[in-house]
Image 1 (tube, rainbow, N blue to C red):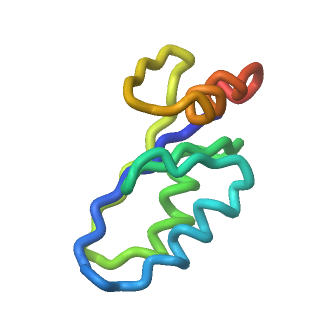
Image 2: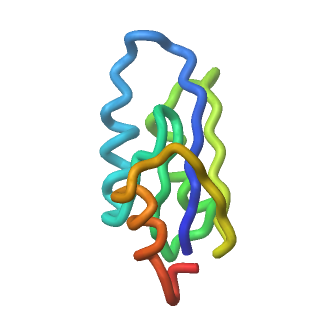
Image 3: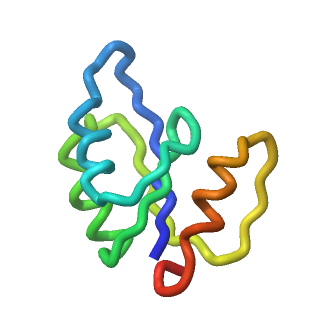
Length: 92
């Protein structure tokens, strides 16, 4: 399954590298925009949220949602579009 992880991190200057490392630990990921990542995982959205919540502050926001095959975008480069197009089969 492909998941979109979005966050609003409230603490300027705070080191959120542990959060980023936890997201990257899923193995297949794309840091799409400043606060949005796409990952491939067999975990549920709740499992992912539970893993990542350890790395954010109580006033931060975190949103995890499963994606469908249908998507649309504009303004990305071919490498970024190719990443989405390459994720197929069981991941959806």
